[in-house]
Image 1 (tube, rainbow, N blue to C red):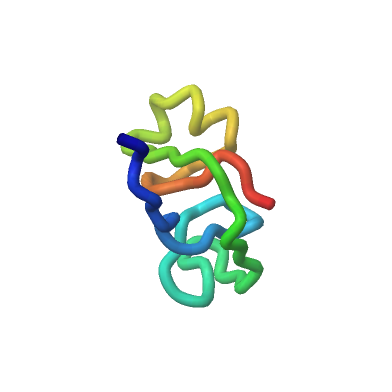
Image 2 (tube, rainbow, N blue to C red):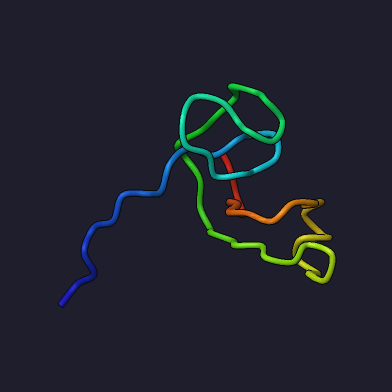
Length: 68
């Protein structure tokens, strides 16, 4: 049985890649958002996460890996 079509969760900030709800990013304050993104990353402890360091993520939260 094929997987159900799932709608992506919200929009993503093109600047910091944070998954946001609403019309602006709560982290950087920009309204430069995209609905075209892929990859989903949940950062719990950015200080001890190698992925968070490579993506320059300083705060815990939900992020997209690629934003178009």
